[in-house]
Image 1 (cartoon, helix red, strand yellow):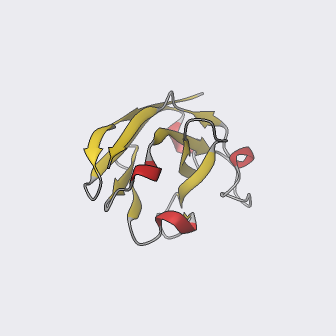
Image 2 (image 1 turned 90 degrees about the vertical axis):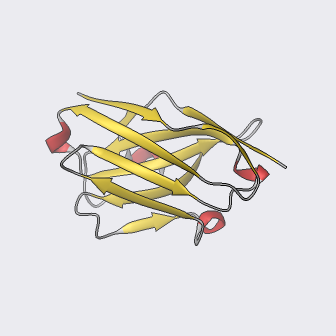
Image 3 (image 1 turned 60 degrees about the vertical axis):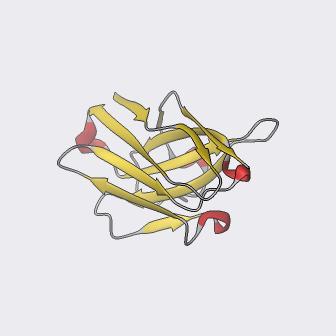
Length: 125
């Protein structure tokens, strides 16, 4: 089992920044990739960013490229999402996810086996 706890959400004005953290515990050695997803009000959950164990491969949805950066600290079992130049359309509940299997499409939620409870990000205009 793997447990994930997100933190760092909050209210920020458009153009501002936030850094989300996701701390993993349990069988962390089995984690291959980690990702961030979000669900905006009235919309389906969507992929935001993903990163493999080594950190050598990162993936982003087009709408956040150049603004968001995903990174991980394996010594701390933590993954981060640095969000800059935030827009009102970034408002959502952000979820951290951990996947155990290699060779999967990290853009899809089916690639992930464990999920956090989510943290709210609200961007005001």
